Length: 345
Image 1 (tube, rainbow, N blue to C red):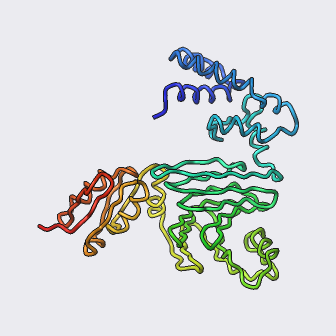
Image 2: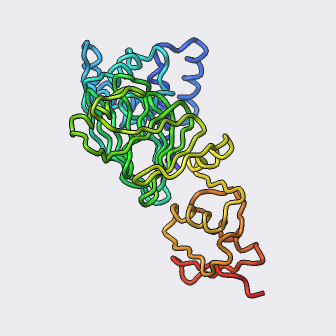
């Protein structure tokens, strides 16, 4: 839970960003907010003082502000685009968004979540990347491409359109490429699962046969659907509601309805949603969100079906749900180990 002072500072930042465009009614609300709690006035004064002390004030007065300086403020305060007004104070909205989309700026960053955590990241081009539990990525932007390498775990991407700089996610032995769309990539061992939630993506192999490095790189940068001479790359195009799994080659392509997609992405709200999944599937998925080791001791019960909706990492609720089946017994061996066996009754 956020500390009251942190909550007050976040609220103060939203008032500050809109400050010069407040209507009379909004000004009255602002003064009421200041008087609502003592920490509100303290928070606003602190945020305003920090704002004025930052180099960003001087940068905004130039025609080519330094994106690193702009980002310093935006990231520090966890400011998201939804907080920015159409015409923000001191022109920060137009300047910040414009700077973040400059095509010639290089950007390198790494992000990681711990077991049981998930995090939303606003990338420099206004694309949004949401990392699931125990996930690690490396981000690289330059003048020709936007690339994320998924090192482990799962991430969902909502991509800002740019045909000049396609967005690619490298995972396992393949690359998922998009221009402006939304999709989910899950790296599970040597298997990669790609689910498209909006738009179109292409899945390409990373290992190219009889193709020079230059041709391979050119192929990865080419617009969707464009053929590159000399690059023998067979790409698979996916649309909304399609799922693909690959290793070295494509293993399967299938359709998924909106309900299944919503269940697959329930983790973004911190939840897990199972609708008739097997016990083995449920344990495999739930184990990603906890340090507790859960094992099924009897293969005969692995195919039992489980239906439930609960908070990711809430192992107690999950085990209670499983234990309610008369064919199953849950045994806590120690605080970090649980065995699930067939009931002896």
